[in-house]
Amino acid sequence: MFYQAPGLIRVSHLAYVDDLMIFTTTSRQNIELLHDFLRAYERVSGQLINSSKSSFIVGRKASSLQTQAVQDVLGYQLKHLPITYLGVPLYKGNRKACLFDPIISRLRDLLQGWVMRNLSHGGRLALIRSVLQTTPLHLLQVIHPPKSVLITIERIFNGFFWGSYNGRKHIHWSSWAKACFPVAAGGLGVRSLADYVRAFSMKLWWRFRGKSSLWSE
Image 1 (spheres, one colour):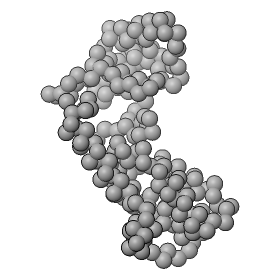
Image 2 (cartoon, one colour):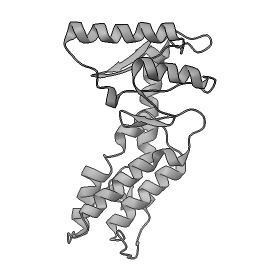
Image 3 (cartoon, one colour):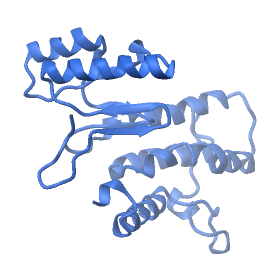
Image 4 (tube, one colour):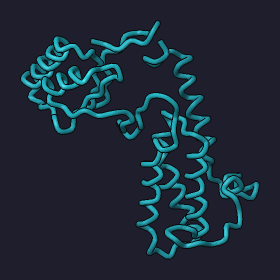
């Protein structure tokens, strides 16, 4: 039971803390073997698998009978790509801006909680640095969003700094690009999201180059 792209290594599973992703075929024999393995794990470890939080995804070529067989044997719910796993969208094909709607909604929800506060520009800048700008960093470390997504997020930052949020509109006396200049150069000393993306991309490249990751094999 494994997944193998042409010419690459076999991947049977991926694990992170108590999350586990298993790759297998939709043959009933393999699914029943997987079911027996999971039940044996429960007996030996004393840890129970939460079926309501477990799910499975099948390929486009899987028939309805194969899909139903997986559901009958394992008892998990069927899901379709894209899904969110560990806070990151998993998808197949081209990157689409809609995949990043949850993180944009999250940022807007944060602004809703601050609407009743009379914040100075210094207070807004502190919230941008400590909360708003750090919220998407987990996502940016593993995936490169389309440029339009970065622009939308930074517009939220800029609007909040100048007081244009939750239906309120104020004049923006400077662009966010200028705000990302160092303080000595007349900016606010914040980093642009594009800089973060480039830094994280180089970090991933270095891991691949140093063969310190499974994906570098």
